Structure formats: structure tokens, C-alpha cells
Image 1 (cartoon, one colour):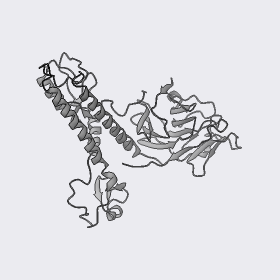
Image 2 (cartoon, rainbow, N blue to C red):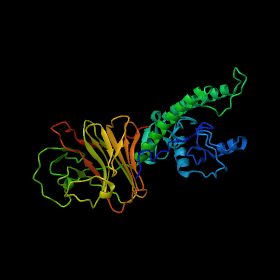
Image 3 (cartoon, rainbow, N blue to C red):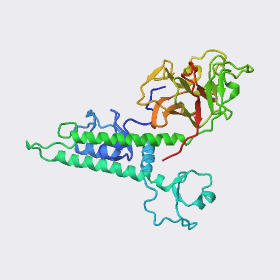
Image 4 (tube, rainbow, N blue to C red):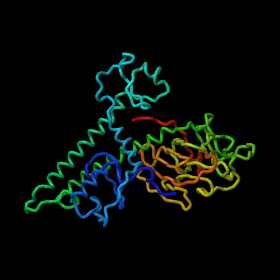
Length: 387
């Protein structure tokens, strides 16, 4: 298990030497990554052998191996910057002679309305105007890159003292503007990468409904099984083996024993809640101590603004904003459970290297009503697939 930031590398998917998305990315022993050709050429003309960013010196040139995971993610990111409308000879479908009005996200091609019911019937579509958002991203990043290159050229010129400034010395007073521009570029690309990562996991959405047979008698479930809140009064329900008591929680009907799944829950207006997944064999007839050892992988909210990963020991989380909707993603084979602030497209926390040996179920607790202060329900929401 580890803290947040597990899915996306903090080094991002761009090379600080060529200022472009990674091609054959390699990581140095210090942790910084570069295109393989970029760092190789840099070391061929510069001594000693050191990292251009942190300046750590290596006694021997490190063996460079391409990081396949970062390479794949960089390829997806590069793909997201492509405008599907670019290079179209016209806006007509060659097969059906109809206007190209939609973009098929499944096959990454422009299609007409007739294509959606014949050749791409079960696929996911967005209007071409929405799909063209990648062009705006590409233009913005290109403008930032050009600004950095201009500042680099200025830093390479003779200073007033006649001393030439080395191209790689961005951190000095002469290159402060370069560092600021590179930081802006890094932040922009980091946001785009976070958006891309959230959209990737959202592809594994499961239509979760709550299982009333597992719900604590004090909980109130909506008829469609999509909402749950605490009702203060215990209902007279049969004490089934699968029912939680005294813990005020409920499981989803859907289970996972292989592959991946993802679901989202609206938490707006609440002061306390629990969200995550639980294994099938958990003890449902005693007070719960949330932790992976007991079969729970969760993130919780307490006292309106205290976010905690119940990792055993608990990990206090520092979030930039209060999530209104939380996404929960599980990769069974990878042993991964991740939580996202959906609106901010930000990773909240990840449990990694988990060992799953039985079925996992969505786990939700609206927590106690608290005299009406925490009366808002948890609402399982459909994923909004937008670009």
C-alpha cells in the first residue's frame, strides 16, 4: 500500500530537453525521465555525466532501458492532442455519403449518423466539436514551448559582462524566466495527463446498485438502489447473515473477482461518509475497523473536512478542494484500488500491491445522520463521458 500519486508519474510525460512528449522514455537513477535519444545526445556532448534537472553526477553512464508503462501513457497523451478533424479531405462520409458529424471514441474515427447504427452501433460518440478539444490543447502547449525556446535563446546570448551563459543553467538569475515558463508548461501537461488518466479508468464503469439484503436496518435505500442515507430509526427487518449490524453500511450487488471496475458516488452536502470496496468474507455482525487487513479498502470523510485513507495505520489526506463526486477504481490483477475527485480530475489516494483472493463488492456508508447535519444521501451516479 502507498499514498496518493501512484498511477501518474510526477515527472509527467514530457521531456525537459526537447520540450515534447516522451519518445522512448528512460528514467535515470535520480528518478527524472527523458527521451532516450535526448539524454544520450546530451551526455555525448556534455561532461560530467549528470542529470540536467537535479545535477546529480553519475560515476558511470547509467544503462538506459525504455519504461514501457510511461511510454504507453505518453502515447495515449499524444493521441489526446490530435484533432480528428485535421487532414480530412472533406466533411462527408465516403461510405454513406453523409456529413461527418460525430467522432467515434471507440475506433478513433469521424463518422456520420448512419455509421452509428450500422458499423459502430455499440460504440461511444461525441460531436466533432467536442472531439476537437485536443487541437486547443496542442496549440496552447505549442505556444508555451515556443516561449521557453525563445527564453533559452536569450539566455545563450552574451550577457553585459561578456560572459556566455550555459544553455542548461535555467536556475540562475539569467534563466529565471525559463524556469517559470517550464513550470507553467509542466502544470498544464500535468492537468491534461490527470484528465486523460481519469477518462481511462472511467471506461471500466459498472452500473452499481445497492443490495438491500446487506443494508443496516437504520439505512434508507431508494427504490432504484442508487441512493442511501441514515434514517435514525431502526426498521424491523429480518436478520439475514449478509446484513450489516450494528455498522451502518451497505454493499453493492455487483462483485469483482477479475479484471477492472469503476463507479462514482456523489458526496455533496455530507459531513461524514465511507467509500471503497470490501471482500465478501467480512464480518458483518460486529463494529467495523476499516483497514485492508480486515477486508476493507476505503477513503473516509470525518467532521466535514478530515479526509482519511483507512490504510491501517490511517493516512491523513491533504486535498486542494472538497470532492463533490468520488470515483472508485479497482484493478483486481494489479492489486490496485484508487480514489478520484471526479470534478477536479485529481487522484485522492491509491492502495497498491494489494493481494485479492476473493470477490470484492462496492462498499458505502452514509454514516450517522447527526441530527440532520449529515442527512444528505450518498448517490451512485452515472459516469459523464466528456472530452
